[in-house]
Length: 341
Picture 1 (cartoon, helix red, strand yellow):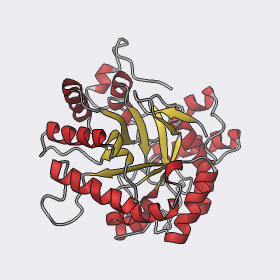
Picture 2 (cartoon, helix red, strand yellow; picture 1 turned 120 degrees about the horizontal axis):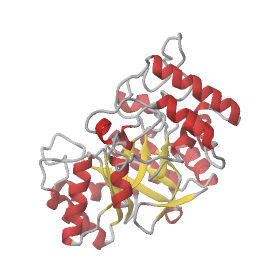
Picture 3 (cartoon, helix red, strand yellow; picture 1 turned 180 degrees about the horizontal axis):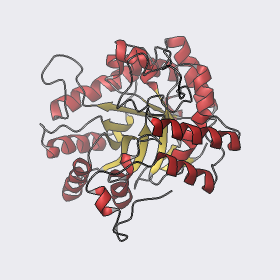
Picture 4 (cartoon, helix red, strand yellow; picture 1 turned 90 degrees about the vertical axis):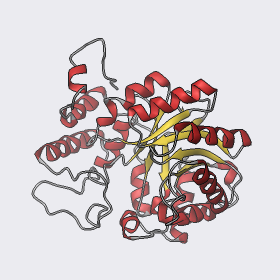
C-alpha cells in the first residue's frame, strides 16, 4: 500500500482508508449507507488490515457514536497498528451546547470519542463543518491545547469554504497554534468543484486532501445506466445520498467513457473512478466505504496500478463542467492556472 504525507506535516497515511459510517446503521439515513453489525465489521477491518489499509475514518455523529464503538471492538488490541480519524461539530443531542465547535462541545466530544474508541489519543481529529457562531480563535485554541496534551496528533477540517480554511490557517499561524494539515472533502469525477478554489489553496498552504464520497454517493459505481430505472439497492435509492442527483445526459456520457477506460485497463468502473482521484494534486487519501465484503474487495483493487495519461485526459474531458464566477473569469488568465493531474 502506497503512503503519502498528509499536507505539510511529517505524518504519512495510506492512500486508501476505510469509512466506518456503514457500521451500526442508526437512523434511516445511515441505514441507507450500510448497517454492518459487529461480526461483519470485524471481518471488514481484518480485510482492510490484510490489504494494508491501516487508516479508519469515523465520527461521533455516525449513528450517534455506535460507529466508533464498533470500530474499537473490531480493532481490538491492534490500536498501535492503525490510524484513527474521527470528527466532531454536528449535534449529538438536543442540548443547545452539544453542537458546533465551541470549547465546551469540542471537549465534550473528544472525551466521548476517546471513551467509545477505547483509546487515549486520536490520530486525526476533524472539525466536521464550519461553525460560524463560534469565534475561530476559540475553536483553534481549544484544538491546540488538545494537541499539546497528547489527546490529538493532527488536525483536519471538513466541508470548509476557501475563506473558512484560509482564515483558520491565518489565525493558527498568528498565534503559533497547530494548524489544519488535512481537509476532508467531497470530490469525484462527478463533482470537481473542489479543484476551483480549495485545491489551489491546499497546494499553496500545504493542506492535504482526504476525499469522501469518491464515487459520488454510489453514482459512479457502474449501477446507474442510461434508459434503466434507478436501482433500489443503492444509497441514493434508499434515501442516503448527499448532494444533487445528477443523472442527465452528461452524466451518462461520462459513464460511457468510464466503461471504455475500464475495458482498456481491465478494471471496473469503480476502480477507474478511485484511481483517477489518486492522480489528482493534493490528494493524500481516499476514503472507501463498503456495505459488504464484496464491495470492499472491489474498492481495494483501485491501487497498485495507474491509469495512462491518455485515459486520465479522456475522463477529464468527459467530466468537465462549466465553472461558476469568479472561476470562469480566472481560468482565462494564464497566470492564475488551475491545478492539473
